[in-house]
Image 1: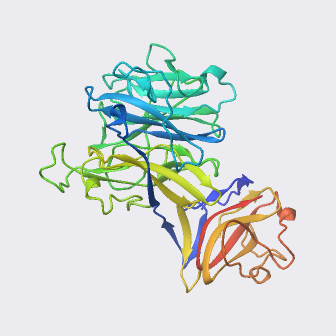
Image 2: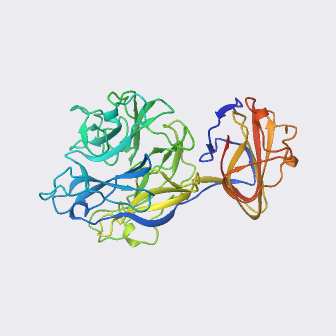
Image 3: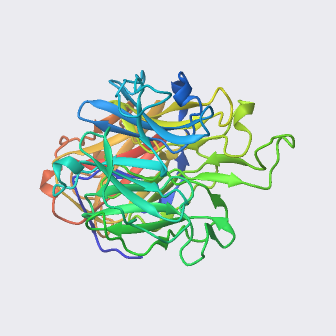
Length: 450
């Protein structure tokens, strides 16, 4: 095992994979599924009568913004994108923007129409980005053979960055997602398909590829993401995002398409069912698939039990200090199609869990900055969390042993650990240490030094 200390500064650390668990007994990592909430967006007008997948949600300067696709069944299924916004991520409005004519009127919330489609915008936080290109997007060409780049100053009025496509290694079926990655200092793009296969498949299944760019115009060749030795399953979309509260962490919500299952032989659109997976990565290319079970199930609604019934959209919003909201389409191809909000505890994708009998784990060596240890944790009334700080060889440090740490109980997003001498750990900053966590009927979601 590599015992080289990991320098984490004051960055928050999640347990989405087993990276931090060097030794353990009596604990397990547990995937937490989101809670289904209200419908955020439903069809209201003729131009958004066919809401479908491939939508993007962001937080932008005090407001939440959404771009959602509408396949208008009344005008030849034109793949347009409409715009909505919200002050809380819960109640959404569809403002009239007056940009695109529909049936002789611009009194609508449409902001993008083809012939390109699968439009995927993002806010460009690159400090070198031009002001009139603060918003960028990728869209697939009308023949699905190329990817094109678009830019905007306000996120509403879009123009093609150049006539030539930015990527020409087809196919680009479904949502192709781009972002500025401040951690790597480059643009990153996740696209449908498999490198070198001449099609969307890797080893017979639909897959995801990645490319990077320094200027959003010139991109590296697409390469397949790597999920290690895991089952060969169809990934129809990827919905990849950077998790802003834990620098360096990518979260991906692929739509897993199970083509061989046929719940309703009379369904006219095709065979199969799908659910949503959870994956994570620390480098953007190698993704951890520890959790092979579904993150989101089709659930009790029979209108979700058909091919492409549900999809996760792109974006994680912090809708309160203790709550994250994510969004996904359900009831695809039904009049009841909508974009549903789901919620999770802040940082609450995965926890290290111990039951009543208690358990513990020790991290690999790390070097931190800051003066206090902050935990995102939850216990029962009889549960607890304790922390021992050790040197890199596993010896408890004076004043920071397990016996010096009173049992901490409760439920906090940012609870501070104290020892008998107090919460300060500033004297240990800059040296290699490791943490020993002892849990009883408790979940630990994240830690950081602040």
